[in-house]
Amino acid sequence: MRLTVLGCAGSFPGPDSACSAYLVEADGFRLMLDFGTGSLSALQRYASLTSVDAILLTHLHADHVLDACSYVVVRRYAPDGPYPKLPVHAPSGARERLSGAYGSTAEGPLDDVYEFHDLGPGSFELGPFTVTADRVNHPVETYGVRLECEGRSLAYSADTGPCDALIRLAQGADLFLCEASYLDGAENPPDLHLTGRDAGEAATKAGVSRLVLTHLVAAWGSEAQAYEAASAVFGGPVEIARAGARYAV
Ligand SMILES: [Zn+2]
Image (spheres, rainbow, N blue to C red):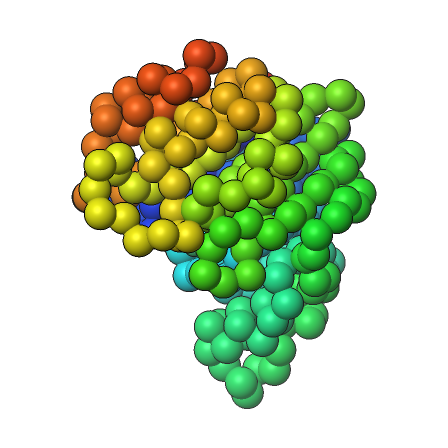
């Protein structure tokens, strides 16, 4: 598997990154894992515009989904299009939410562009990947995911507070892409996001090989603090996700 960070800015676009979006490729199959604000721009640096084979949206917060609306234009109105329908695995209600956000009721729903599948706890096959999803600890219906392919594994926290599902999904993962939105030591609301220390503790409990911290909020956070807090409790390699970073998993 190859993971490309298209966007890793937490909650709103940062000065150096789009919002959450990750391109995961294997055997020529391209999966968009979240499709946050600004990431359609970044996608074009790493893949042809129409080469996406499937989309998985972990939850319907704006910063994880909105460029899936812009992408409708790409598929529907391309001069050499329209392009075939794309499977979109997302929490229930995604069809209505994205159709509404796209904004033109006169043009109808997005059924000519996307084929929506409700995401739920459990495993399914998607191209070369076995995808396992489970509910994590966030105020809206949110799924952390684990992707497996040819014996390798990538776990992604989505947005979450600490929870057991996160540990299960990340168990023994070769790469654990884990959010670290909050600063340790601050007055953080519960059941919403993780700190660097939380991410490090989850990585240790799950026994992952490598931890990549993502969804940091550049305007409010501290990369150095998140890195140090995670490294203090996780003995393996820790990195901060950067837009454009690529990982062989
Ligand atoms: Zn969220």
